[in-house]
Length: 118
Image (cartoon, rainbow, N blue to C red; front, side, top):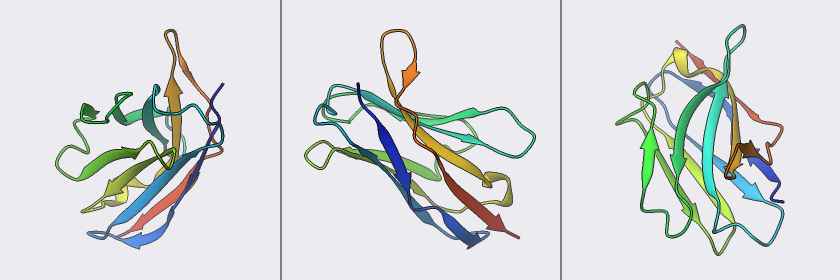
């Protein structure tokens, strides 16, 4: 089973950019669809973006991040990325990645904090 670890979070001003990395700790990675999620204080975890298993050319985004965030993957490095541009204070949250199985999301990492100041 794949296990994932996130990195790249931090404090950034509104309008700035950050790139998050999701690294797999097991050899098998390319077959998994990888998703990014976020959870703000006092709110439920929400879907942000996903990249389908394989070449990574198929992606989906939440409406709130379309046109600002870009998800990608590098199967050789066993990593997925979330490039976040034009950040807003509402993007402040703990960001986590997970791998999709036939029934659920799995391999959740501990998350990385993103804080956007106004």
